[in-house]
Length: 472
Ligand code: NAD
Image (cartoon, rainbow, N blue to C red; front, top):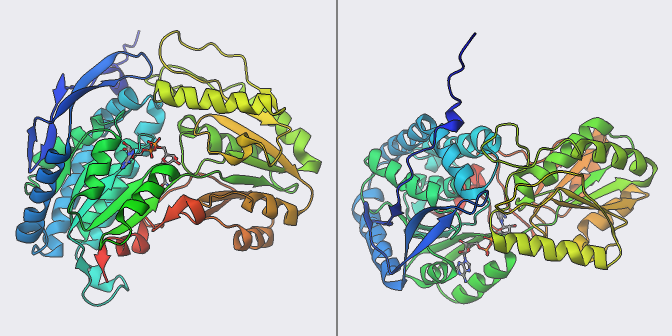
């Protein structure tokens, strides 16, 4: 008989019992201590220091010294070498980062292993390449760094959002102080260790775990720019608090994307796209295709095939590589999803969930499909940020566009049709930062990502993303 070696996912990474703040190249104590919990089991994974306003000031001062004395004056080619080194280290330790991310966040290992960590590494490789070519980015002959950047990120893609924020900022000669989300600080702290391993000069990257108050203190601190990804409500508060100051800001906020299936679409492909659009990462995706708009003539067929497919999704242990839907990130998020789903029932939409066993401990939510949804219902208007799909129908292409655009958000949209002309027609009319055609949730470091309307402003990725970190 053959013996199989244990899968790399079955080896737990060495998670420390306690992590400090990462300031000026060292791990230091903070103002208080909080716990990080594995949402799939509710077990405490580690404790972590929480940064107060004084810690924020120290980190910003360290970042300022590093920017003025070392990182800003350094040639782009030298900065690029550090970024390449970070990218390679992230690749080398990718399995470890993938397991740690699944433990701390609850997302399935197949997603952290095949998407989050490789895409994070790709962002460092991509921006390493830009570091000595900024003068050729079409943003002026001598684009200058902005200085010190305060960055605040959410919990849904912890290491990937960190990479989206840190890689372009560093490539452009800025230094950063980043606050990870309170429920998912682990991979940011492992990234801090990786910066030490890469011999990154102290102060270039500072990581300050903490909750909203730490984020607010960072926004108020002496930074030159704030880069925020998170909810529209907090984004609005940040925009207000820095209005009138010299600080620049980019905001990547919420969404309620329409995924439009026309009657001439390849139905099986579209069903896969619908599933990927809303159930990827438990639906904790700002650009999730959470509103399915399906043409009336094919609605019955699409829905019956969709339900058949959703019934095959495996919900459970995030470290099992066959798992499709992992744990909800926190008890609070589970409460929010449950409450909004209840409003859908209350407002008269029809709810469908496949029969599936959920683990006893941890935070779980069954994949959910609402039909008979009206535009006015909360489940059609508000971001649920969970594995919940709202299905609406339309008769004509014009009606599809009108319904798709009837939202305060404008982050992404999907179009499913076999006609190229219809794709272009729809893409021109959809008010969304990204429009995917016959696919969904595709990302690339070279492709700018960002929103319109209440989904925020500024772009991340690509040449456009560099502009957000340069004085041009
Ligand atoms: P959130 O706005 O509650 O928190 C995001 C981050 O902001 C966290 O680190 C949090 O600690 C911090 N924060 C909270 N209050 C703050 C304050 N007053 N000042 C400064 N920082 C503060 O959002 P969340 O629940 O963590 O994340 C989910 C939201 O993020 C969703 O709305 C989702 O659509 C959005 N999101 C957007 C994108 C994008 O690229 N557009 C990507 C991922 C997530």
